[in-house]
Structure formats: structure tokens, C-alpha cells
Length: 268
Image: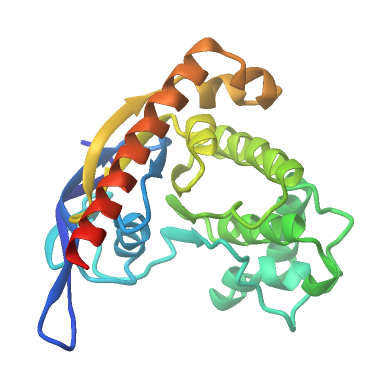
């Protein structure tokens, strides 16, 4: 049995005027331990809603999520979240931010310090442990957020556009780091992104969602994440299958966007 089972998930938001929005409809995904799934689709297809339900921030209208044979009913340390903005504590330094979870659990100080320092070395911030987070660049802040998530030892890491606000070069470096951490830690990862190239690079499995209602349109099993571990990601992008798949998905999403625009114009 898969470690994470999303079974016939649906989510409806009821609006004050009596109408409703069907954000998700009958979404089913089975993820085995250690798989890296990227989720892609046009705006309004329910990507972030899906992630928030898996995180336990939202309760679905229908369906269940089962992790390690237990039904997900709310937030839990076994599911760690990395947001687009690091959501770090501005009044804490880097080491304190990363060690926040273990502090809440009452971990002994010496053990916590060793663990935090190790993770900061892993993400390349060993020389910035005492820095205030506002002194760090955006890319560094996202490294802190990744280390903080890993410090809680979650079974599943949920990433909502974690690299979306970064410049191109920093984003590429962070993509390499995500692949490195995925391979070294064996964590299950679900990554939401608007970038087709990023979804292809980081998704061992890739799901394209369609909107209104949000549903799975197509799924791919890809070699590029495995190829990219420790490699030059620009070389991976030169693989002929990468360009072919990218163009296919771009056309797919473009067609969805055109359909949405057509519906909007017809309604007005």
C-alpha cells in the first residue's frame, strides 16, 4: 500500500450569496514513500487547495487522505510545509528558526544544536547560523525554511511555489538543492509550481490539473529528476524528451487557459 493515499477528494466552497465553487472533484493520488510529485496547472485548478487539504489546513467536502494507515484530520508534524515566502520568525536568528520545532518538543539543547547545525551545513548556511533572517537574501531564507521543515523530521514535505519569488540563477541553484535533499533524505515531496520547466525538472511524477472543477487531467512519469541529482540542470534541459514534453504540457495548459477565457467572455 502507498504511504500517502488521496482518495476521491472533492472540495466545494460555499459563498455568501448562496452559490458555490467546486475547487476539486474526485482527485485520487497514490504516493509511495520517497516519491517526488510535481503538480502543475492553470490558475484556479485547485493546486494550492489540494496542498492545504493534505497539510490538514482544510477539511475536504468529500474523500479522505490517508498517511501511514492513519486518516489525516488536521495539521501534524508528519507533514511539513514550505511556503513561497519563507514564513520565518523575524525576531529569531537562523539557528533559532530552524530549531523552533525541536524546541517546542522539548528536545535537549545539545541534541537540538547538533541537529540544527548539521542541517544548516547541509543547505549551505553553516556560516550564517547567528544571522538575523532579514539579513539574508530570498534564496537563503528559503534554505532556512527547508532546513526548518527537515528539522521536524516530517514524512511528507509539501512545497507551495517555494522558489517562485527567486531570481532565475538562485532558483536554479535551489532546484538542485531540492533534488539533493530528496535523494539524500528519502522524503516524500509534493511540489506545487506554475513553471512547466520546474515541474519537469523536479517531478519524478508530474500531474497536470484542469480547472472548474479542479481535477487530474494527465499524469507523467519522468526521468529528469533522477537525471538531475548532482548534475548540471541546464544539460538535463537539453535532453530531447525534455523539450518535447515541455511543449506538449505548455500547449495543454494554454488550451485550458483559452477555454477559461472563452467561458468568462461568454458569461459577460
